[in-house]
Amino acid sequence: MSNAQAINDRSKKINKYIFPVVVAIVCVSLVILFKKKRVENNTASNYVLPTYYRIPPFKLLSSDGTMLDSRDLKGKVYAVNFHFTSCQTICYKVMDKSKKLQDRVLDHQTDLQILSITVDPEYDTPGILSKKASELGAKKGVWHFLTSDYDSIKNLLMNGFKMPIGKKMRNAEDVYDIAHSGKFILVDHNQKVRGFFENMDELYTSYLRIKTEL
Image (cartoon, rainbow, N blue to C red):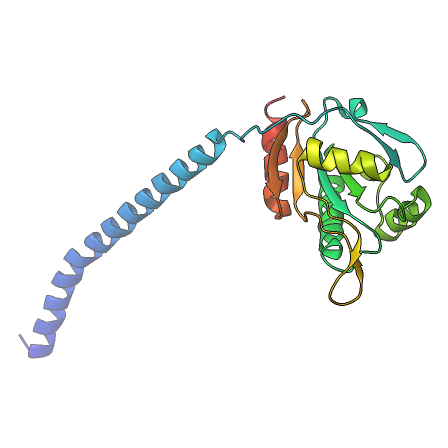
């Protein structure tokens, strides 16, 4: 037998034993990965959203001149954000997130409501808000632009949603600003706050989770 043939025979014998070992390692790895993923999915599906506090009854004036009563939202889940139309700081991002959230609601034909409440009611009249709603493509019955008198809004934010609101003043850039939160508040069908979000994927996933509770 030549050396070349001997080496070839030896290689075949080695491969005969190595191949089953490699296959076994791959199979075990896939089983471990599958089990880990299943545990993660089970954990996620069993996760229960926290419940914080109940929002008191409120009435706000919509951009179309009609009143929105919190009783109209009974049985519905809604996301609330705060803004003002002359804002030059965080409001652009808040509105952009709201628009993307509305797009998702419309694409999936779900019933999540979006409430954008102004923190500058003296300037943001229904007419001004209507113009802003039109610019952003707000869909009637989905995305609501809301206002009231300043005292009512301040009371609703601080004592209802438990969110801060500052006074209108000029900032370092000599631009009028009103301190307020950029987070979205998710309120369930029982008027209870279920979460505070900056990420709309997380908010929408939480909304779907609430829907399973109905």
